[in-house]
Length: 182
Image (cartoon, rainbow, N blue to C red; front, side):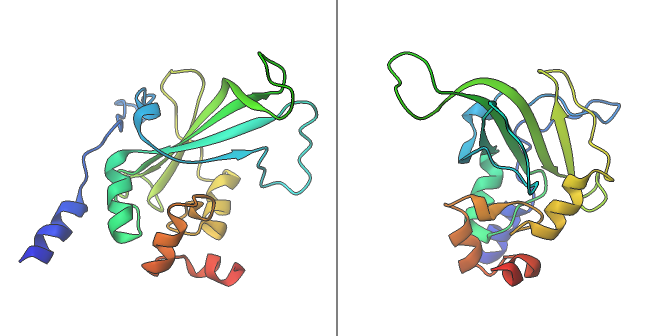
Protein backbone atom coordinates (compact mmCIF):
# COMPACT_ATOMS: atom_id res chain seq x y z
CA UNK A 1 0.00 0.00 0.00
CA UNK A 2 2.76 2.47 0.93
CA UNK A 3 4.58 1.74 -2.33
CA UNK A 4 1.44 2.54 -4.31
CA UNK A 5 1.05 5.88 -2.52
CA UNK A 6 4.69 6.75 -3.15
CA UNK A 7 4.38 5.91 -6.85
CA UNK A 8 1.19 7.91 -7.14
CA UNK A 9 2.85 10.95 -5.57
CA UNK A 10 5.45 10.96 -8.33
CA UNK A 11 3.06 10.44 -11.22
CA UNK A 12 1.84 14.03 -11.66
CA UNK A 13 3.80 16.76 -9.91
CA UNK A 14 2.39 20.27 -9.84
CA UNK A 15 3.29 22.45 -12.83
CA UNK A 16 5.59 25.00 -11.19
CA UNK A 17 5.94 27.72 -13.82
CA UNK A 18 4.50 25.70 -16.71
CA UNK A 19 2.02 28.05 -18.36
CA UNK A 20 1.02 27.74 -22.02
CA UNK A 21 -0.95 30.37 -23.92
CA UNK A 22 -3.93 29.36 -26.06
CA UNK A 23 -1.75 29.52 -29.19
CA UNK A 24 0.70 26.99 -27.70
CA UNK A 25 3.41 29.48 -26.85
CA UNK A 26 5.05 29.18 -23.44
CA UNK A 27 4.87 32.04 -20.97
CA UNK A 28 8.21 33.05 -19.48
CA UNK A 29 8.80 31.18 -16.18
CA UNK A 30 9.41 34.31 -14.09
CA UNK A 31 10.24 32.49 -10.85
CA UNK A 32 12.87 30.13 -12.28
CA UNK A 33 15.68 31.78 -10.28
CA UNK A 34 14.01 30.41 -7.11
CA UNK A 35 14.03 26.85 -8.49
CA UNK A 36 16.69 24.22 -7.87
CA UNK A 37 20.06 25.17 -9.31
CA UNK A 38 21.72 22.22 -11.08
CA UNK A 39 24.97 23.46 -12.60
CA UNK A 40 26.92 26.14 -14.43
CA UNK A 41 29.11 25.82 -17.48
CA UNK A 42 31.56 28.25 -19.03
CA UNK A 43 31.89 28.66 -22.80
CA UNK A 44 30.33 25.24 -23.42
CA UNK A 45 29.55 24.42 -27.03
CA UNK A 46 28.38 21.31 -28.78
CA UNK A 47 29.95 22.47 -32.06
CA UNK A 48 33.50 21.20 -32.69
CA UNK A 49 35.07 24.52 -33.67
CA UNK A 50 32.89 27.24 -32.19
CA UNK A 51 34.67 30.58 -32.28
CA UNK A 52 33.72 32.69 -29.28
CA UNK A 53 35.99 35.62 -30.14
CA UNK A 54 36.08 38.02 -27.22
CA UNK A 55 32.59 37.06 -26.02
CA UNK A 56 32.30 34.46 -23.27
CA UNK A 57 29.18 32.93 -21.71
CA UNK A 58 28.20 31.20 -18.52
CA UNK A 59 25.29 28.75 -18.63
CA UNK A 60 23.21 28.23 -15.47
CA UNK A 61 20.67 25.41 -15.33
CA UNK A 62 17.60 25.39 -13.06
CA UNK A 63 14.77 22.85 -12.71
CA UNK A 64 11.33 23.19 -11.17
CA UNK A 65 11.44 21.84 -7.58
CA UNK A 66 8.73 19.23 -8.07
CA UNK A 67 10.62 17.58 -10.93
CA UNK A 68 13.88 17.70 -8.96
CA UNK A 69 12.32 15.80 -6.05
CA UNK A 70 10.98 13.13 -8.40
CA UNK A 71 14.37 12.79 -10.09
CA UNK A 72 16.07 12.35 -6.74
CA UNK A 73 13.69 9.49 -5.90
CA UNK A 74 13.50 7.78 -9.30
CA UNK A 75 16.42 8.89 -11.49
CA UNK A 76 13.98 10.01 -14.20
CA UNK A 77 12.19 13.23 -15.10
CA UNK A 78 8.42 13.31 -14.56
CA UNK A 79 5.94 14.79 -17.00
CA UNK A 80 5.78 18.60 -16.68
CA UNK A 81 9.52 18.96 -15.96
CA UNK A 82 10.96 22.34 -16.90
CA UNK A 83 14.70 22.83 -17.27
CA UNK A 84 15.80 26.45 -17.73
CA UNK A 85 19.13 27.28 -19.35
CA UNK A 86 20.08 30.84 -18.48
CA UNK A 87 22.97 32.24 -20.51
CA UNK A 88 24.89 35.12 -18.94
CA UNK A 89 27.65 37.23 -20.39
CA UNK A 90 31.03 36.76 -18.77
CA UNK A 91 33.07 39.75 -17.64
CA UNK A 92 36.64 39.90 -16.47
CA UNK A 93 36.89 43.55 -15.52
CA UNK A 94 34.85 44.97 -12.70
CA UNK A 95 35.17 46.08 -9.11
CA UNK A 96 38.22 44.48 -7.50
CA UNK A 97 38.49 41.48 -9.87
CA UNK A 98 42.02 41.03 -11.21
CA UNK A 99 41.81 37.61 -12.93
CA UNK A 100 39.14 35.18 -14.06
CA UNK A 101 35.54 35.81 -15.05
CA UNK A 102 32.26 36.53 -13.32
CA UNK A 103 28.66 36.47 -14.50
CA UNK A 104 27.02 39.62 -15.84
CA UNK A 105 23.81 40.41 -17.77
CA UNK A 106 21.46 37.73 -19.06
CA UNK A 107 22.18 37.01 -22.73
CA UNK A 108 19.41 34.49 -23.31
CA UNK A 109 17.01 32.00 -21.73
CA UNK A 110 16.03 28.63 -23.16
CA UNK A 111 13.59 26.13 -21.69
CA UNK A 112 13.37 22.36 -22.19
CA UNK A 113 9.87 21.15 -21.25
CA UNK A 114 8.58 17.61 -20.81
CA UNK A 115 4.92 17.32 -21.71
CA UNK A 116 4.18 13.90 -23.16
CA UNK A 117 0.70 14.83 -24.36
CA UNK A 118 1.79 18.05 -26.06
CA UNK A 119 5.08 17.18 -27.80
CA UNK A 120 6.08 14.44 -30.23
CA UNK A 121 8.87 12.63 -28.41
CA UNK A 122 7.69 14.08 -25.10
CA UNK A 123 9.96 17.15 -25.00
CA UNK A 124 9.87 20.66 -26.48
CA UNK A 125 12.41 23.49 -26.63
CA UNK A 126 11.70 27.21 -26.32
CA UNK A 127 14.01 30.19 -26.71
CA UNK A 128 12.90 33.44 -25.09
CA UNK A 129 13.41 36.98 -26.32
CA UNK A 130 13.13 38.86 -23.05
CA UNK A 131 10.11 37.83 -21.02
CA UNK A 132 7.66 37.62 -23.94
CA UNK A 133 5.94 34.25 -24.60
CA UNK A 134 8.01 31.97 -26.83
CA UNK A 135 6.92 29.61 -29.57
CA UNK A 136 8.32 26.12 -29.67
CA UNK A 137 11.54 25.61 -31.59
CA UNK A 138 10.67 23.38 -34.57
CA UNK A 139 11.35 19.67 -34.02
CA UNK A 140 13.60 19.75 -37.10
CA UNK A 141 16.13 21.93 -35.20
CA UNK A 142 19.39 20.17 -34.31
CA UNK A 143 18.80 20.53 -30.55
CA UNK A 144 16.24 17.70 -30.66
CA UNK A 145 18.45 15.13 -32.39
CA UNK A 146 21.50 16.13 -30.32
CA UNK A 147 19.61 15.69 -27.04
CA UNK A 148 18.15 12.40 -28.28
CA UNK A 149 21.58 11.06 -29.25
CA UNK A 150 23.65 12.37 -26.35
CA UNK A 151 21.36 13.02 -23.38
CA UNK A 152 22.34 10.88 -20.40
CA UNK A 153 18.76 10.64 -19.07
CA UNK A 154 15.55 11.10 -21.06
CA UNK A 155 17.12 13.45 -23.66
CA UNK A 156 18.60 15.70 -20.97
CA UNK A 157 22.29 16.37 -20.37
CA UNK A 158 22.37 14.98 -16.85
CA UNK A 159 26.03 14.14 -17.52
CA UNK A 160 26.74 17.83 -16.82
CA UNK A 161 24.75 17.92 -13.56
CA UNK A 162 27.22 16.66 -10.93
CA UNK A 163 24.59 16.09 -8.24
CA UNK A 164 22.22 14.12 -10.51
CA UNK A 165 24.55 11.91 -12.56
CA UNK A 166 25.34 9.68 -9.54
CA UNK A 167 21.60 9.27 -8.88
CA UNK A 168 20.93 8.20 -12.47
CA UNK A 169 23.90 5.85 -12.35
CA UNK A 170 22.73 4.28 -9.09
CA UNK A 171 19.15 3.91 -10.32
CA UNK A 172 20.24 2.55 -13.72
CA UNK A 173 18.35 5.19 -15.69
CA UNK A 174 21.19 6.26 -17.99
CA UNK A 175 20.31 6.13 -21.68
CA UNK A 176 21.91 3.21 -23.54
CA UNK A 177 23.47 5.65 -26.03
CA UNK A 178 25.11 7.61 -23.21
CA UNK A 179 26.29 4.44 -21.49
CA UNK A 180 27.98 3.34 -24.73
CA UNK A 181 29.81 6.68 -24.98
CA UNK A 182 31.27 6.24 -21.49
